[in-house]
Amino acid sequence: MDFSGCFTALATPWTRDLSAVDYGALRELIDWQIESGVNGLVAAGTTGESATMTHSEQEELIARIVGMAAGRRPVLAGAGSNNTAESTTLARAARAAGADALLVITPYYNRPTQEGLYRHFATLAQISDLPIMIYNVPARTGVNILPETIARIHRSFPHVNAVKEASGNVDQTSQIIQSAPGIRVLSGDDSLTLPVMALGGSGVVSVIANLAPGETSRMAAAALAGDFAKAREWHQKLFPLMKACFLETNPGPVKTGLKLLGRAGSSLRPPMVEPSRETAEAMSAALRKIGIMG
Image (cartoon, rainbow, N blue to C red; front, top):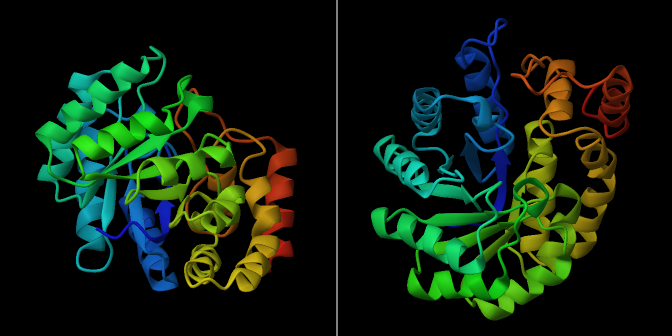
């Protein structure tokens, strides 16, 4: 599994009554992503609203995405929980569905210690031979997994070999790379992709790629090739969209963007609600400014 380039954290289109996934819209979205050159797809992550899915819905979603992407792109399956036993259940189901790797968020709400975090990921690594990407997003989970803990996990279990780093602390990227040689660090914040890659990161797990897959992929590819002048050009072009996508809690704004592009509906499952008119207007302006929407 090559954790390099642009991996789209797929939004999940719902049917009008929110009772099921709109798989027709999802297939069109996935085809567009692949045709645009993204390097991989993330199923049932935060952007995919996994927190409002039942286990059976999540398992079906992952299996369907694996089928839609088969032979074309790898699929990372969300398998995170604040309950280690539940996370192992999700990990086994993702493997059975044919996922290529697991994306596992640090346990949220209960705020485990660094030892607790180590044991959580150790348990998952022991029951699954799939590559595992640690997802570090303290703003959502209330806990920051430290570079030395990541290094300890990687030394014990080499197939835990990537980190989606969304702490907002660029210094931590350097610390992870120094502490855990061989582990891949991908930005979990679109607006920090360029600095993370300049420090040695290998790509991005991107929200904005739902709306600009080709452009985001080309930014990551330029950075991987060492062409940071070109990568900076793409960053500056995409920056308005990066900001618009996070005016309200993700994935609200990006789903508004998908609706504006005619790619999917904008509905979200409660307690998430559709963004304000002001956010929708800002999203429309950003899409127009970067030339994605006429």
